[in-house]
Amino acid sequence: MAPAAVLAHAEASLPHPIARATRAFQLAHTPREQYEELLDAAEALAIVVSTTVAALLHGKCAKGHGRRDGDRASLSALQRSYFTYSGATFGTWTTWLGSISPLAELQPELTPGFRTALSGQGDSGIATHLNALREERNRSAHGGKPRSQQEAALRVAQYTPHLEAALAGAAFLEHLPWLLVASCDYQPRTQDFSVVAGRAMGGHPDFERRTYTWTTPVADEMFYVLDPSGPVAMFPYVANLFCPQCEQSEVCYTYKAERNSGPAYLKSFSRGHEMSDEELGSEIRSLLDFQAGDGA
Image (tube, rainbow, N blue to C red; front, side, top):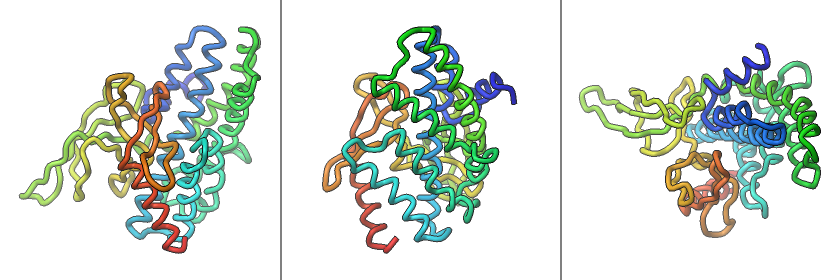
């Protein structure tokens, strides 16, 4: 697929945080704006891939699928990062993706399409390209931002191929749609659940609503990833929270939590605004304590 086509396809078909960030990159006017949007899109991509894969592992471990020790150890490594001083960072996501490569090789059925994304062509899988972009983000954050529009243009030209390659590697997410549940109603006659959910895919902020029939109930106003076996909750990695600054609901990701008590902290994908949630904090602590007690 040609580079321009990769960006257009990502904007149209990948989970909303990636699609929105890709669109912002394409609409940026100046090289400096393009440079900033390029790095934002790369980080959003790393977070979305990581949270989707983590949610699938989490859900399937809860159902007793897979090799429990390895799966839970992988999740524990990610969840422990929430209790560090800075919480989960760009580097956390890319490092974690690289670390679970053996698990993806052993159990490809747990995360459909992810093994191919990791392997890529030779040693240029999705984690490799995201790490190159992460290193540039770190360079920018530590006094190495472009000093002119011309330098910014050179960096954009240098790093855009990494973003395009990472987006191409993330194409498997097209078949693992994010859904935001609006309602879930039990149907006594058929003994299943009629679910109305917004399909949080593509760059448009208004999610197209569709009706699904599932055999298990789901919670309103929660995100799920729909894999071939059914809906899998994205809680506690992704949430839909009201942002007081934006005065509207935002798609957010968890990045930090208090270790002993207190809330989890989330950031909105769109503007980076921080929100807190007590229930998520308790959930992350209970998950980690459960895994430790399970011997994983």
